[in-house]
Image 1 (cartoon, rainbow, N blue to C red):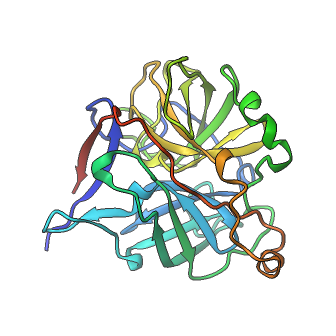
Image 2: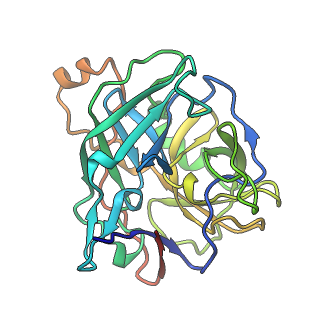
Length: 284
C-alpha cells in the first residue's frame, strides 16, 4: 500500500527542502525544550516539550493520506522524539529519545481547510528526564497581559531546526538557529497568529523547521506553523501563539504536582480567515 505524507502551506507554490538556510549552530543546553520529531528515521518537524511526557507540534507534521485519499494520523510506531541533542547523535551527553504512546490531533483540524486547528500533542512512551540538556518550555504566564506588547512589530525572536542548510541540500552536523523579526501588516486578520520575517535576507526556513518553538525575549511564545519554505527572500513566517490558551488548563492540582510544576498548555480553536488559501505537497 502506497501512503503519502501531505504537508499544507499557505499562499505560494514552492520547492520543498528541509531546514534553516544560512543559520548559526546552536550550543549544547541552549534550547533544552526543543525536540526533533522523526518519521521513519527522517526529520519531519520540530516540537516543544510541555511536560516530561508531552510534546506539542503542528498537526500537519503527523498526518498522512491513505489510498482512499483520506487524511489519517501516521502510525505511532513510525514516530520517534529526540531530545537533549544538537547533533542527533546518540553519543551526545544529553541525548534522550522516546517513542510515542499516543498521538492526539485536534479533532477539528482539517487539512483541506489549511492550517485551521493545526495542533497535535504527542504523549511519550517514556518520561523525559529533566536536566540541563532537557527541560520544559518557559512561557510568560506572569506577563500574559503584556504578550501583545512584547511580540509587537520589530521584536526579534529565534527559530531553530534540523535539515538542509543550503539550496544545494547540504545537511548540517548540528542544530541550526536564525533570527526572525515580528512584522505583521495592519490588515493581518488571522486570529491567534502573528507573523515575522527573517532578519537576514540570506536566511530561510524549510520543511523540517515547522512545528519548532519560537523564542522571544527568553520565553517560548508559540511555534512555527507555516511559511514560504526555503526562500532566501523577505517573506512572511507564520507563528501560532500560545497567548490565547493559558486560561484553559484542564488539569487538577494533583496532576500538576506530579509533573514537577511544568506548565501545561491547552489549545482551542484558532479561527483563520476563510479567505486564506492552502496548497498541498506530497512527500514520497
